[in-house]
Length: 163
Image (tube, rainbow, N blue to C red; front, side, top):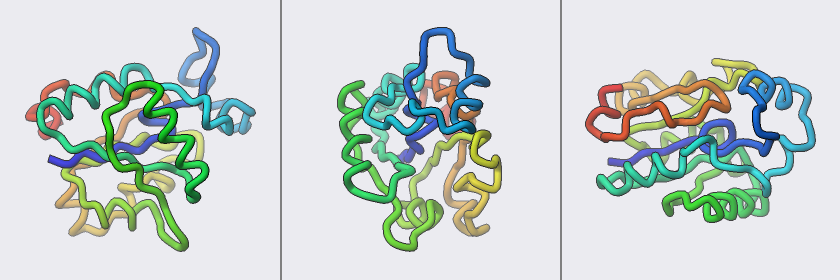
């Protein structure tokens, strides 16, 4: 089973002081606070690293989708993933004229996990809302609230498939 998870806002988030609410993080993103653009200092969204490791231990092949479009910024994502012990996996990103949809459709994961893009425009900005009908039938999409992480998703892969 192949699982692809969007990075920014879903699996990793900008570093904030302890006690910052999800709603405050959305506002920081809307304002483009410096922390939002400090990609090298991003942190795991909750225990996303542990959740993905559990799925990998059950046989899932994990990959990631970055919001970045150049290798230098993607290197920062890879360093954050390594720093927080995320499972190894390819970090995909858009190149040239590609859209997120194009990247996901080229990988064709069984499950694609993304956030609701609240701070950047909502459903119109989500990858899955642009899938063709055919692709939408092939990929199980799971949408979580932006900056809330994936901690609440099932640990068991069989349950995740039905989520």
